[in-house]
Length: 232
Image (cartoon, rainbow, N blue to C red; front, side, top):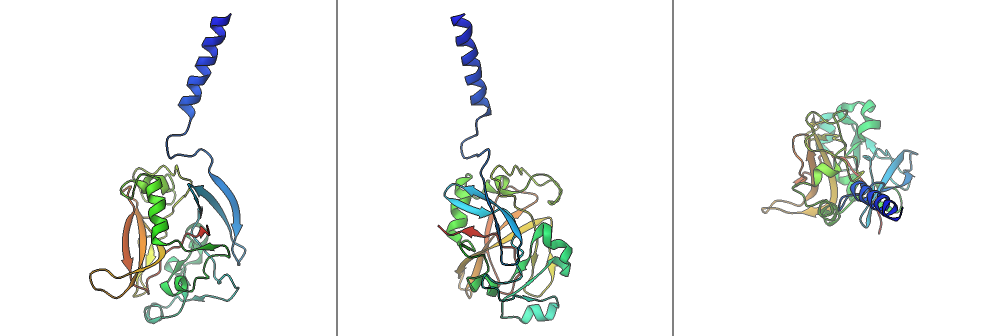
């Protein structure tokens, strides 16, 4: 009897090891649900020491309640130097699944995310990437699985992070829309000047055909997605 009991305990211990999380992976890292000033509700996820909204922002107002300009006209978007947003292809049906696209001037305000949250810095993006093995592979852990929202093949996507990144595309500085379902582009709040250029905002992008996260800079008039992070 004693031998059988020992074997049973050993077997269940072995099963527990098989079903345990991999290093850097979490089974249930979901956190609170939060709402913005418009009343939109967002799932959140705890990753390491950070807490992120796991949905693209879709607020139409700043955290103090003042409105953001909805700009649809291409020429008007191209000449703006004020905070603004748009829905991809000027179609509000994209709002719920992909969120809004915001220009730099909305980011610059420091009041785009709800109180207690902010647009992540470049360093905070780096911390997120590092948690999942570095930028060269971290996109796999951050992208939503499957091809309901991402174009096939949505390479290597596992969403083991719970971050649930969706590809909202972007709006160019000239007002045109591109890349929904193929690229997701997210602002940071960090300005940088590369190769002697005027300061531009650092952003991240993830792609349907790769598992990396790419880091680049965009014109202030560009419209990109935003994923807010909770204040430390």
